Length: 304
Image (cartoon, rainbow, N blue to C red; front, side):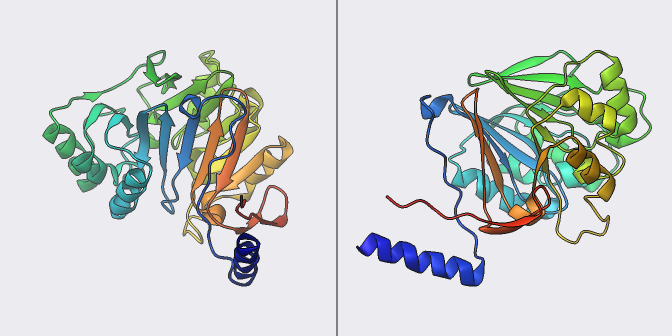
């Protein structure tokens, strides 16, 4: 009776306030919890940051802006992170590598990937400083390089060229796979690099696409979407940002491709779980207006 009363009170509170709820892990479909791949799209506003966990191993792809360091470190600690197997700075723009300095100052790390070791910014200098403090050297990966994370495989797909003038196109492109479930991370890769990646013959087909460049019109072309053929797309983007992201053009293309879209500006932290076959999403905010379905969605915690 007390549990039912507590549930009713919480439900009324949610309906009245639209407060956020803790993200809870879905029930297993039979696989042991340690066999799951968990992909956390951390809400860092107009920036990118994703924590990947498989078994007891963790990797971080980008770290948001410099001002996001404390938020990212706190999130990692809340997930039980003590050390990182890999840190990836997809490209040297501050909204991707800015928060990584704080992360590297706290968490022992085995390997750091970056497309470059030089870039003229304070954020990048701090990133390199804390890499050096750990006695590490940056690894500049090549297409085809593979790494393991627990039972998952991390494959570098791009960039396939080193001559891009636009730094966005130098973004490291990663495919993370557990069983039959595939997640594609593209950083801020734009149309030119998307085209070059497809022309290289890379296998880009994925279930989940981290939508490029925060949903900018410069990325996520029709041809690229056709080849990736994702079921889900995640956009890391800040609310009411000055760039107008996500732009209507890529949102329209995603709708035409029947992709279910999740957005950090609307949903907060977003987590995808997979046992290698099924993919389940949970998110932080209880009340959202989803552009994927054009309706208000309410999520409530389950009570025993």
